[in-house]
Amino acid sequence: MRVISGSRKGRVLRLPRTKSIRPTTDRTKEFIFNYIGEWIKESFVLDLFAGSGNLGIEALSRGASNSVFVDIDRNHCKVIKKNLELTNLTSLSKIVVSDVFKYLNSISGKKQKFDVIFADPPYLSNYHVKILEIFNEVDILYDEGILILEHSSRLNLSNEMDLQLMKHKKMGDTSISIYKK
Image 1 (cartoon, rainbow, N blue to C red):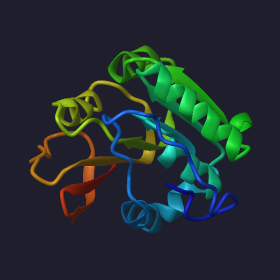
Image 2: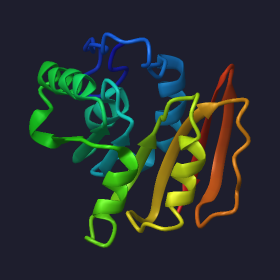
Image 3: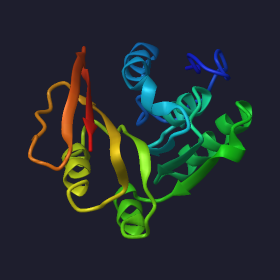
Image 4: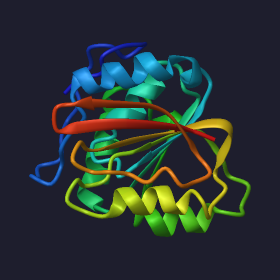
């Protein structure tokens, strides 16, 4: 896995030593960043279920001003820290070891907001639905901000929320749904 564009293009990233991580492929990353390119420059990014930090690091490489990485697994967070060191992006980042939903609830109402939020929860969970539901409860996305949700193509997501579905793309077993506030 590598950074595919921007100031850190070509840098190889490490993966946690676990089978629970399903890193976003270069092809999928390319689709996401080609579509959301205008939102990345100088944006404040949140990478949920961060795993290796792949998406947040790509955003930083492409000009995001700051990224927060959230993952419940301490080993994943150690790999994110190492990847940030390898790409020399530590100063633009914060790593939070926490359950994603507890973290989102903890920052709601604290006036902390993001321009771009990546969410790539485990496919074999109901977290995809919970992520969309929580965005009806917490106000952490700036107006015109976007949520990029990576999920199984077999999953049917409700569109009954405060976010507007801008783009949906099926790529084999993976689908990308991009929502705008």
